[in-house]
Image (cartoon, rainbow, N blue to C red; front, side, top):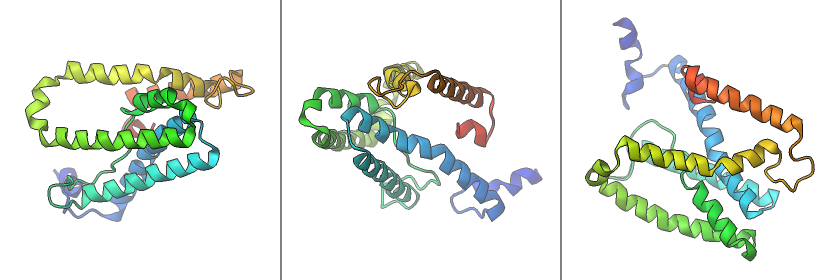
Length: 208
């Protein structure tokens, strides 16, 4: 009972949380979100052929966008925002579509490919807002079997990207791709990730 009372502030937006409680959770959130925020733009940059300079700009845009939307979630404007203490990150769900657009329009050059992808995201964002407003009416159409299958398909579609990066540098054309050192590091990372996901607790489970 005393333990529940001690951490009750963590589960209320207006709850009082001590620095001792808040600091570890803040670090946990940062560690858990940083990889998911920078990996999709790195994937898009690799598929589009962006230069390292433009890749850094794309990563910075993703982090700034995550920061602004996080503030909007915490401090909503009327009906926009959830008023929940959480970090709003970058989704992997759109990565296969972005890579597909990059492959389709790659001949136009990296910068124009990114412009096409960002334009498509604007349209996708409008569609997401409309779906969000009517979410309670369409939820019965998405049972766990359907949503789980969608997540599985997204994961499978990203396997070629993962294998390219495990081999080294994200492209088979780079010198040294496929070296045993790259596969060793990738294999250890994969094993640790699976281990933390299935057997880890708290920070280790979320931050793998």
